[in-house]
Length: 144
Length: 397
Image (cartoon, rainbow over all chains, first blue to last red):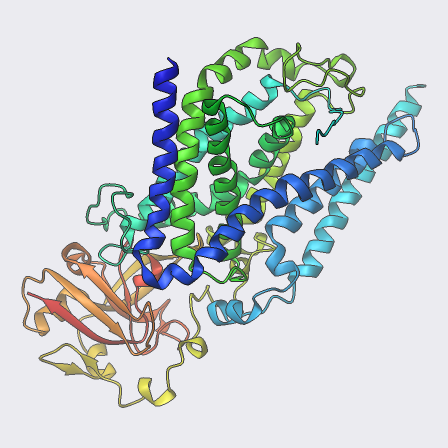
């Protein structure tokens, strides 16, 4: 069993290593090797050592919320998660990065995206707050 | 140095990890295969060109159904986006393992190394893919080559991970009933039995397991709602934050503007002629030929697509005019110069009755942005090969 596992692991590592030779086959790509390595390692390290500690710390901060009869924690957590997710995924448009290429490809600019994202965040926060108020009211009405 | 971290989540554990793992196990192969199909769809001009044996078996990219590339590439990009929350949740669920010491056993150490390919690979693919569809080339290297190599590095890690962890996943999924979990409220949420992923001394729960699944599912739905508009014309404006959710008023998306092409005005003016080798035709002469109308999609490698009504001369009629009755293919050249200014078409792509040199779209002459004086439109062909501002077509006998 250990032998099969060893062969499998080595084979997959070899496949990954062989994939990188695609870059070596094309001399025009050679100047990009360092950049690709930096972005590969960067994506990994940024997630594990920056993004994760950051969101874990932010989540810890939720314990500082004042205690309420209907806990606030998820009513804050969810809109913040929604805002963070959309910010990460749609970052280039929101911060207007790469605008000349966008203009060349689409004929349009990136002007509306920041405002749209802020409105989306406001909507998510608003809905979450509304649901919280409804829950508080229902609990009070139930005499809780 | 030894880092001691107190893991606090009471819901982190092998069952929850396995649920996320199962979703990814079902969905990621679709993303992988549709991505590799894109390489095949580029026909005789794939990018990167030389990939050794790391590609699907090649075949002539079909022309039927016309929406084929719209579907495969829409799935590749669309699924790739909506899986982001699932990938992040999966990584969150296993992150305590990252902070354990490197194993002494060389086999285990190699296995750990393969996780660099798995996790680094998928994050690299997500980041480069998301930047590419938003035209942000801040990374400064060839997107095509990097995304293709990154894909195979990830595939290697993914195959190994599935092979090694599938039994664990099945066992963990069987350890709890999904139905019971979906009925368990916050007040009754307890930790999973002791395991390396389960916190030995957790905080009280603030979210049930079903709540966590709903949050991740909600993230998927949110991103799906913000993405589908780049593929479905009727929902276009709902892609609020994507460049392909917008169009100029009363227009459909352009894949490259006339201004960006660098073409001089007079190169597509009254003196423009279509060069068929033996014959040169003016736009008026083309318009006098039998015209054919077809509803065909423009589908881009960036995942967006749009269906429009195109009118023009059938490519096979042009082949006959050029004196090539049975063309084996065609080389199309644009007035534009650059990497995508030439496209090779297969025999089927030339002979399909809906394959056109379009002069009009939706009943009006093409605008310059859409390829005036004439552009190629072929069923299921990647948009980048539907050459605009066509200068010459060489039909091969």
